Length: 475
Image (cartoon, rainbow, N blue to C red; front, top):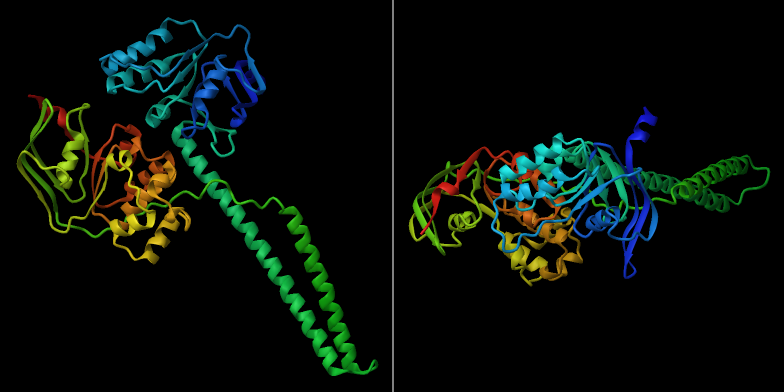
């Protein structure tokens, strides 16, 4: 079986590294691609995915490492398709991507974000073709549902170590295994620390015991042949021997545990939403209309009840964000009525939070939004790995990951019984999105979501749809 697998390998790379202006982008990348295999390449923004694709496609030189291609291997590299000035439907874009694949006699296709700008028809077209193809594919895509349906192996470039890690299975398998691996590393680290502390404590106890015996012996000033003196000498000897054993054990353990290093990746976030039920009626929207440029939304009639999990859909420009702003009171309707139920506490993540970051100090804005005491706030923020140092920073200086965790911490602190999200996957970093998905799956309140991210929508279990395509028109 091993030989068969070896024969089917058409590409392999080992210990690939690459620097740009002395900045290390890739450090230790190793993996293989077999005939017909569909491989997903994942990693945070800036982890070097596109750089690696160009190296494999022979468009960029590696610094170190070995790359092997099977004899007469033909590679087709399809970079991200840019469509400035072109007005194409998602299906037309998909055909534009598929045409070079269908007409090429290449054995390995390298695709960089092929699902960008595709509508549902285009996605289905691309998925069906690649899924049935007997060619090999190496794919970078932010579309997790696409990777879930297509790939059978994930290669992760870790942005911290700049090395590669291989996971068998699709994207969901990868996230489960990676999470379990990080939790295991933290458990092993905790166990080692606990064991060291216990042995150190025992050594200190034995040392105190020995000192106690020494002081008692000096206090007694007993004669050499005194039976009491024999007792102290015996106890003294036993304690000294035990202490020596304990010290040797500690030294050996410390030698073996010289590699006790805190795991580089933080423990997965635990996003749990607590909320008190509001009224059965959350929002009642009657005959609402709004002009947006040359388009008109409405008339909209929509009733949202407690516990609804509503997905608002529609083509670009149909007014999805505007509808959310009207529901939350940020924008007024031109006509019609929006009634809000009693005791409805709304938690809202808008796209504007990302596009127009505040320059306030983290802790100041957090206290202003959540109305928590500073002690409560610090405790919650620490749970989201926002440190004592982080809370003193200006919000504009936070990294995308830190800012993602801050926004979700705010959402948890508000204890909303109605959560409204506008394209969260566009802005929140991947770790935050995945933990938010887990929290929302268990959330008992009302959800109103605008999202094109199929994986997110499926994971959180939205069960009602409101289509703005049929509630929007040109003026």
